[in-house]
Length: 106
Image 1 (cartoon, rainbow, N blue to C red):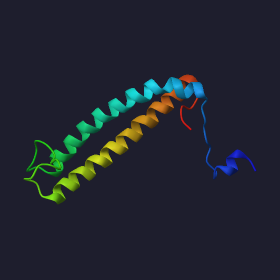
Image 2: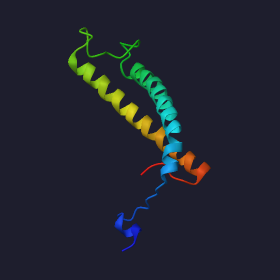
Image 3: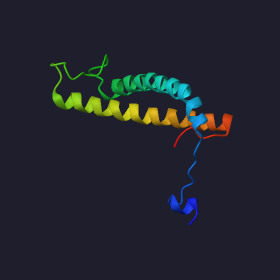
């Protein structure tokens, strides 16, 4: 059985230990960028979804908002942050691979 068959038909790329070490600063920087981008995206989405509260999303300790509204805002924020982080991390890994020839993960 080949490695391709053992991996369920997916091609698995694996970088060396050096690639993982060299990628760490890129990964940290991309995480910071992803957080900033996700925060801005969330603010814009929240302004459009909740036009009666255009300033800021409700926090868990703000008693003027009902629980359901706090939970919906937290869920939307979590989804946006997760998706943005995954997109930025994947893009950074692909760019790193193009530059070095090594995949930084696995």
